[in-house]
Picture 1 (tube, rainbow, N blue to C red):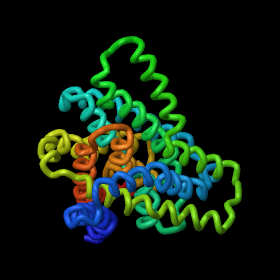
Picture 2 (tube, helix red, strand yellow):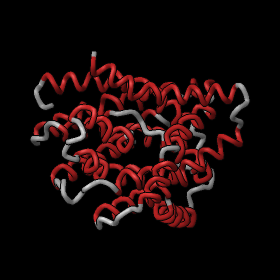
Picture 3 (tube, rainbow, N blue to C red):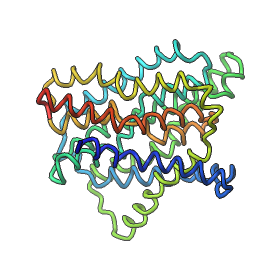
Picture 4 (cartoon, rainbow, N blue to C red):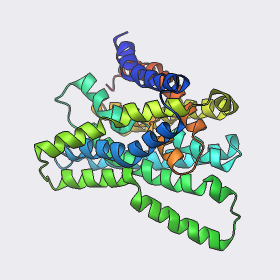
Length: 323
């Protein structure tokens, strides 16, 4: 019951912020222009600031564990490859396939990882969450840029000539290099590795801006949510939610246990594999020309469902004695 209450306390506020955004749209407090502005602000400013702030303060050098980071890296690549195969079975429209893909693999690792481990092991935890973030989150975003570019509606309707492919490759590379989220991650990693001091004033301002990412992003997503369109996407959203909350954990967690990971390492891997889809999926999809409805449906389903699925997995892992 304690685990259920903890999980509900972690995820229900996220779900309710999305509902609140939808209510604000219905009473005309947030219109389409305001929602679009909030999306762009979160994508270009608030979310990069949040990731920079989280990563810059972590001691990656002192807690370095190459085996653990390599597992997170390989598991992420294998997950994306598996979901790409499944997406060709369950989603026929390329533009929706991109949203299905990133919605099925991108966890709320940066937002939930550290908080989840601290809640279980306290502030004296050994730093596995930042290493999990290092092994997975950069890949999440790099592949998201590639996937969303390759499946963008504008490319879907532009033909398949070699010239178009050349333009697309350039666009994808530029998109990765200019992506604000990736820039925030790289800057945070460099700050941490080189132990660059952050002045108190700067730290406070960056932290305050980063603190806007989750509430603004969630309310914007709720305001943009269209129930009728979501019902048209209910089957792929349900499949993606099952993949996100159960299938990836079922496949990769036994491998992690077999490799000898335990305690905080297992909890960090659980967050990476089986936590709710991150709100940045919707933000990136909208900012890269996609409709965003399937992304928001997956986020809402996994956010609500992970309160119970994470509790279920914690119970199983506790029973087998690895946490």
